Length: 340
Image (cartoon, rainbow, N blue to C red):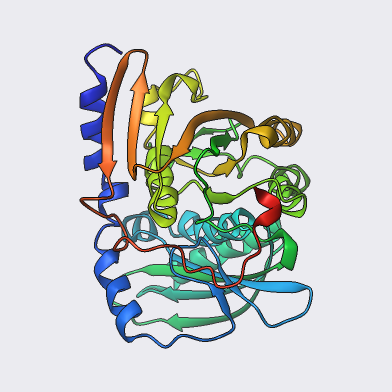
């Protein structure tokens, strides 16, 4: 990769999946200044799934996502399916189990709305999530679909996105048993060709990792890709890392430069202390993931990529931000002693 690393870094920085997240920071600023703060919220902005503490042994998890308009218009069935999938991933990333979904669909033609719902039902059956509420706009000028999911996690099993500690290993776990999506060339489809039992066995690894308190932080892979998702994890924790590109597993039929930007249907970036890394990797492998340590968390608030003797900085959080102004994680009462 001699001479190509700098070009790769530029590609990643300019990738739409990452750039489209940057305006979020302005909205987050408004929320932090003007929004109401509820005492039951354990953690919210910055998490894949917000944690609501109502007392007792379990914590309620909430997450929401909208599907990009281009997919909603071009393939409403796939968009409906994806609206459930992306939220399911968020709940499992927190160590939880998804239970129920709420959906919003907007369309001008009934056949589009019906395809949204068929995709939503297909994913609901596959991931065992019931749709319990929703809103319909049957006279919209543009097709759109979004969903929210409620889940639950045992109090001592909750995994925050913002818990990365200096010295942690950064671990990437991906499902390589998939295919390039027929609907999106930068999508790696790992779910549509698997049955429910096999899929849930994959996802169960996150609940086991949470129950055994093996992780400090976790995020599911978003449309920002492997590097973009790692950046979000680091920004929330106010940490930095060096990622070794040579350590990243990827399918032989895909070039690394494309793999780094792909939306991977089933995958996670997590952090854990060195003495627990082997146990974490073994558990991922047991559940069918390709998993490896790809870097180490540090304090410099920069993400750097290296390949052989080359090294380049992708992002410097001391000078710029992605989705939020720099601020420590707002986890209000999470006991993390046993994760150190």
